[in-house]
Structures are given as C-alpha cells and as structure tokens.
Image 1 (cartoon, protein in one colour):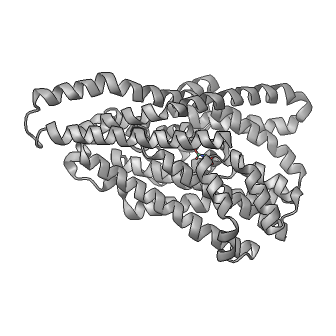
Image 2: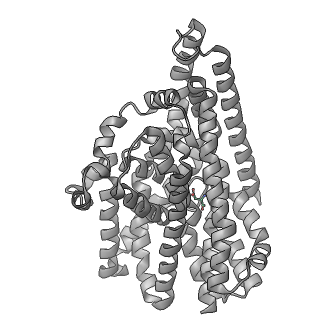
Image 3: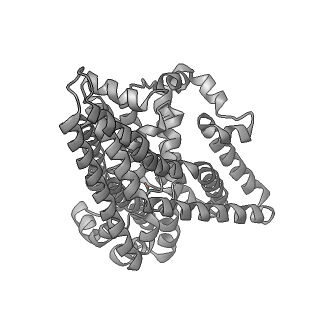
Length: 430
Ligand code: ASP
C-alpha cells in the first residue's frame, strides 16, 4: 500500500514534469522562434543556449543512468533466465507449453505493434523542414550508423556477427550488444548442462548484481520527473509545436496498439484457449487491471494475479504458482508491442531505412526484451536503448518518447500480466 502510494505520486510528478517542460518549451518557441528560414533573434539564441548548456545536461544524466545498467542487466537477466530453464525443463510438458505460450503471444503482440506502425507511419507525419530539424538535432551521427544497420549487411553477415570474437569487446560497444546477448544465452544453456551444483556461486553472484542494478534503476526512475522535464523542454524550445504533434502521433499509435491488445487480442485468446467469454473475463479482472496500471510493475502485481487466477477462475495453486511469477519476468506482451512501436517509430523519425533483416532483429529483440526486462516501472527502458543501437537508430532519440512513457508504462503493464493470467487459465484447462 505504502509503495503504491509512492508510485502513484511519482507518476503524478513525472506527468507534471512533462507538462511543465512541454508548456515552457513550446511557449518560448512560439514567442521567440524565428519564422522558417529567418534569422534567429538574440533572445532566442540565448534561450537555446540555456536549453543546451544548462537544461539538456540534466536530461542526458537521466538517459545515461538508464544506459549505464544495460550491460549488467542484459547479461545477468538472460543468463539467469536461461539457466532457470533447467527447472522448467524438469517440469516437462507444463514448462514446455508455458514457454511456447510466452513465445507465441510475444510474437503476436510484437507483430501487432509492427503492423500498426507500418500502417499509421506516425514517425513520418511531420513536414520536411521539421524532419530536417529533428535530424539535425538528434541524428547527427545517424548517417554513419545507417551504414551499420543490418539492412546494409545481408543475412549471412548478420548471422556471423551474432557471435562475438571478443566478449569483452562486445560488451564495450553498443553495436556489439547483440553478440553479448548470444554469449549470455549460450553460457546459460551451458550451465544447464553442467548442473546447478557447480554453477550455484555464479548464479548467486549474478542474482546479486541484478538486484543491485534494479535498485539503481529505481533511483533513476525517481529522477524521471526532472529528467523528463529537461528532455522535453530542450526538444520543445527548438522544435515547438510540431514536436508535440509528433509525440502525439507516437502516443496515439502505441496506446491504440496496447488497447487493441488488451481489449481485443487477449480476451480473444482467453476465449479461444481457455473458454472464458470476453465479458466475463474483463469484468473478473477489473481489480487486477487497476493494480497493474497503478503500480506499473508486473512483479508488484504477482500476488494480485495469482489471487485472480485462483479465486476468480479456479486455477490450481500449483499451476498459478508456477506460471504467474515466471510470466511476470519472462512474458511481457505489452512491452513487446511497445518496443516494436518505439523502435520503428524512431527509425521513421530518423529516416533510417530498415530492411527485412532489421525487422527480423526487431521482432527477435522484442521477445528477448520481454524475457530480459525486469517487471518494475521503466524496466524495459534500458533494453530499448540497446535495440535502437542495434538497428542503427541513435538511442538519444529516446528523449522524444520518454516524456509520455510513464502513462505508456502503466498501460503496457496491464497486458503484461493479463498474458500470464491467460496462460495459467489455458494450462489449468488442459
Ligand atoms: N513496467 C513493465 C512491467 O512491469 C515493464 C516495462 O515495460 O517497462 O511489466
């Protein structure tokens, strides 16, 4: 209860930061920015100077704190995830079905997000002059990075590059993180082979590192009101109203996707796989949805999800006790959808052309992020930066979407836990 209160008030603070930054930035832009092509006034140049030198550094600090934990979080969570599959393996059929469900519904959600962005093209809804301005501000180095995007490489090279020649080097470069993931997955698989006894010390060490990173992430999120205000102010001063429109398009797209998932796709799955009619399903889950939405954390919602599964739908405790906690860390349908929308939207904004290999990478990464992201507020944000770098989109562009992320985070947490619940209903029925 105590922590719920803190979370709610933190979200309010973040929203206030967003509003404050946006209103001040757009206001100054409308009052002082020159007409397109005209000379900048001295006042506007001074305002831009302040935004650049005094405000942006605080926004960058927030971003960097997020990026800082990427390598340990990715490594620990994927290693521990795969190593933990040893237990799932021992659970035989139940474990196998659970994983099948996680992958299948994760891909479905990621595909829904991808289709929506391709259909609505939210990142292309700005005129050429604004696009040039956004790109000048954030994408200075993008051209060089486009060269490195998967599209330029071809399938075989993409596959070869998945395997690092030097693990330490892979961890040290943003482009190499995908190969670090491969290493973590292989190491986890090897640990299943070696057995729990000989790897216990390593697992405990990595669990410790992971827990510490989550504490840092929690601290970082407390800085979010300030970080978000600074990032959005800086962007809004230079780009003005068109920026807000662009963010609005992103917000509308991602929310449409999450609502479609939550009220269309998932109830249909509950009906098809567990025989629960959509009306009954949604009404029995109302309290659960409120908990997930207000805490913005799958982990914090686990007790409520188990209670709903057992009390409302009669799922046996041993099934709920296995699927729900595992799903809270490994199965995040809302996050998978969100990830695809963000990456493809920002690629559109940056003018990065993605090829089929890039789409495959994005979909695959959506699944990995769903596995690797922690079920805490903002848990997927550090990983998002990684995927952006992977397809040649500058991670700094995240500044554009972070302002509205709190609301999106609250919303995506609801399908995240709903997916776990339906999985437990399906397994219980079988
Ligand atoms: N907040 C989400 C959850 O707990 C994770 C995320 O997408 O950031 O499920």
